[in-house]
Length: 268
Length: 88
Image 1 (cartoon, rainbow over the protein chains, first blue to last red):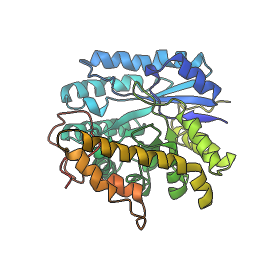
Image 2 (tube, helix red, strand yellow):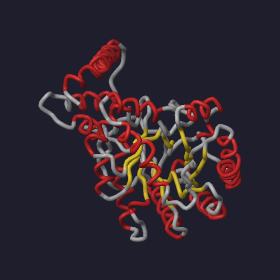
Image 3 (cartoon, rainbow over the protein chains, first blue to last red):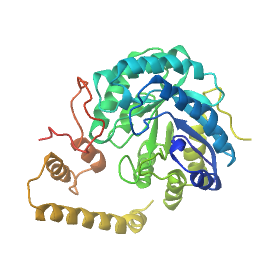
């Protein structure tokens, strides 16, 4: 079995996790920029974080034979400080030509505030001006439905954005149809408590088809499972999906989306 | 996948989760104090489960969601709690 982990916050994980992923068939891991668990106080903190994502973490992954890619942004949880957001947006272009950068992400909304939406639209503008792919975080729990609607509306309003170059992540049963019908890719995040379980993710594959859809662990410093994707593959096999169907969901679909970035290279 | 296979695969897990939910409701009832909006939202969401319903997972999620459409003036907190406070 081979798979791509399209969303994992590896700076929060141990080398044991890299080893487990590599020995489970992981070919590449993609790391969106995210919240550190606390608000960073200056643009310098982000500059160092982007250096970590583009320089140090690929080397750490390479020790286990894993290709490491990343996405860059300021997380919506830090979007209330508009001055800091503008400063961070100002340094991102410096990193966009680094060889492992896939695009802008994970941008989006958290509590669906006006400032979050304004900073989201600035990130979308940055992605459009630099022809970058976009990875989008949708809000948690009770805020997800409203946030997904606001995000889809904002993206549709920007005519420069090609839906097939955008993945909207963390969909659940009440948002997946909205995302897919608008032409975007959809990501399903496999968490033990929030977001969705492997069983529910496979339900959605069976209900909505296996096009423009991927699964990820989004493992980070919270309760999360770095091997969630291969475990979901086992769930698919237990339910009678063929090896080819499993491969499409956990390897070929992310490969197809990510290959739209010139920096993504399939492992030979 | 045939229904028998679905039941074979998931019945015990669903049974365990159902008993856990029942035990949680009992635990809440035994505890002194009053319910808050989260319990009201949970009890309302339980109404989405009758045998005649379809898309129960979607309906439960919608029941627990903020249905409004205007952005908040400001985000005063970062965390979500799992239920919309103004749910009736």
